[in-house]
Length: 216
Picture 1 (cartoon, one colour):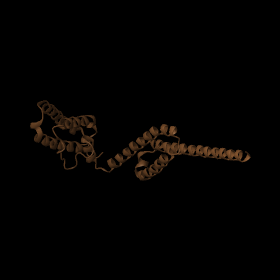
Picture 2 (cartoon, helix red, strand yellow):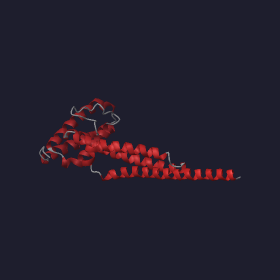
Picture 3 (cartoon, rainbow, N blue to C red):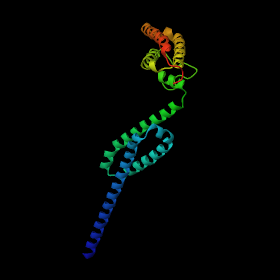
Picture 4 (tube, rainbow, N blue to C red):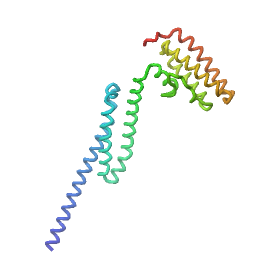
């Protein structure tokens, strides 16, 4: 009987130790996950001037903390893990958006002023110095003209004479592309594009007169 009692006490003691260890592991896991989340949140305090030259370090640190957080998840109970899954997804999404913003700023700062202009008018990488508009089709032609006109209207007071001259050349190239696909456009689309072209040409002539010199 005494041996049985001793054995039971030993088993109970072992259970207590296991539970205690598991509790410590869970506590450490939650702390690891919390530090991962704090790290991502703290990136909002890092300016672009600081982030751009240090992006590789930031990404390396993120990868380490992300892997540690994923590993820590395995130490949590099923109930606690379920609570954390969605939160970790949101944290990763937040980081991805931040990383993309920094990368876009790096690309933008490395571009020539005229390429930055083309990107702002038509989208990143759509048009380069060759002004090729073969990507314009009957499906998107009107939308391209509308976007060009809306962006120009919003920023026309900011453009230099050189930039306005570039926009004129871009419009000429776009018009040439439109001629090749014009037969497949509806009369409504042709009419709308005609109005945009008329307004754009008029604004370009007027805006260039008062535009700044090419130095910003």
